[in-house]
Length: 257
Ligand SMILES: NC(=O)c1ccc[n+]([C@@H]2O[C@H](COP(=O)([O-])OP(=O)(O)OC[C@H]3O[C@@H](n4cnc5c(N)ncnc54)[C@H](O)[C@@H]3O)[C@@H](O)[C@H]2O)c1
Image 1: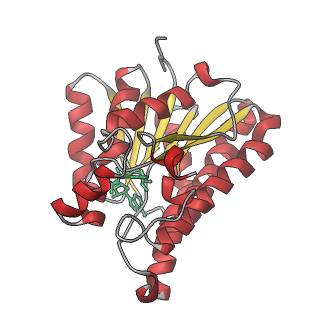
Image 2: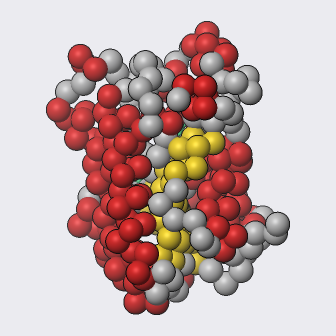
């Protein structure tokens, strides 16, 4: 199967680094014109440049998704500069490691605002402005295995897991509400992926080895292995799939369920 996005405009949040960056790169390699959104301005500029050096079409937009009032105006700007939006990929999230007894209200709000609230209002802006009027669109959100099963810190934490459980449900709700407009909404639920977020959450090589040992395939995923699931869900190859949570985790969920 040759998945292509020629002539399509794709928006990717959390695109400065990690899995979001790899999604943006693979979309650009597949012909999409990519709007890359992130809070990290300098890192975003470097990442956009990397894609442009490979002859990909990409443009960076610095935004803090927790500032909900700024989301709608940014979506308008992307539409003016790149065209109507066909694909929305939402990888932006934060995942601080914390045991349940120590989570403060401010930390709870920060995690939910970035991981669930910003994600919902980005879907609302993109569907409302670009997808519903054209009766077409595909959205892929980033949930997590932590949104499906309970896990001990530091592999996850109560606020992170709760926010990812919310992403699972927002994905299903969006799929049903926007199906009449021919808009599909799916999510990926990665297990452990070798990125900066994972290293920050897990902390030490010993804990990383312990997390790896729990995976039936005996390794954590590479970002490309998550991104290929994302591109499949975003593409016409998945045109009958909506409201689906695609687990990509080397078998860990199967072992625990
Ligand atoms: N790495 C893993 O093991 C793993 C496992 C399961 C799910 N996930 C999910 O995959 C996605 C990507 O994870 P990653 O490991 O690449 O993380 P990462 O930390 O490397 O990348 C996340 C990006 O989101 C951006 N971001 C965070 N808050 C933002 C905000 N308020 N506004 C705009 N941008 C913001 C960050 O700056 C960063 O560039 C996340 O949703 C994460 O929860 C990751």
